[in-house]
Length: 252
Image 1 (tube, helix red, strand yellow):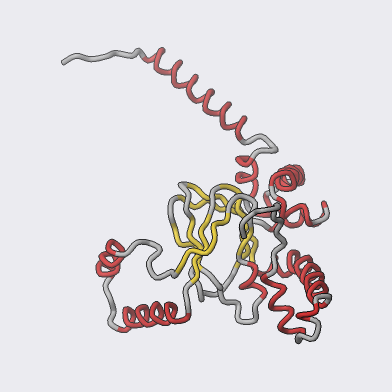
Image 2 (cartoon, rainbow, N blue to C red; image 1 turned 120 degrees about the horizontal axis):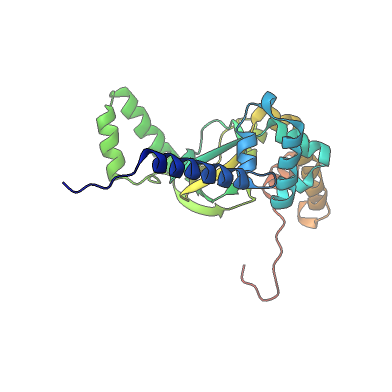
């Protein structure tokens, strides 16, 4: 037998050095003003977050995420107090079209795909799910089905890709039926997101959204085509309006 021998003294010295280096790297990566620090702070319980930690997170979000610049400094701090940070690894269906919306999301790292199914496709998905429940399909059968069909099977067509700084999930919270209007699939090795619950969204975000909504409705009213349109229809249209800038000769 050929062996390599490390003495106790050398082993302990090397181990202490490795631990010290690891702690130093962790402290450096988690210093205020970094995403690692944000994830650490927003991963705590709300009551355990200090004022300085909240202020550091708010400063980072105001710098990196355009969505947060819509709010006053006081509102930004309140949003940071109620937000939760989550990390999702690999390709995963975050939620499916037609399910109840419970939260609003802001992407910090990675990207997600938006998939929309037609009414006929949704009907087929619902029927298959009901049949599986009625027949008492076993978990092994479900696994076999999953091995045949990709994770995005039955979700319809991909209509958009959202990346860092983008938000999603608000439409289900604003609709009366609260149903998700699309399926969301994470598409990176790691996707970090801020999550704001339905209750907190109504308290903080919805006020700003309604203000912006009224601006869009006013804009539509100034257009001849929509001048006499019913207010309910204008409100629904305004929810889907997104300002976009195009350069000269750019293809739409």
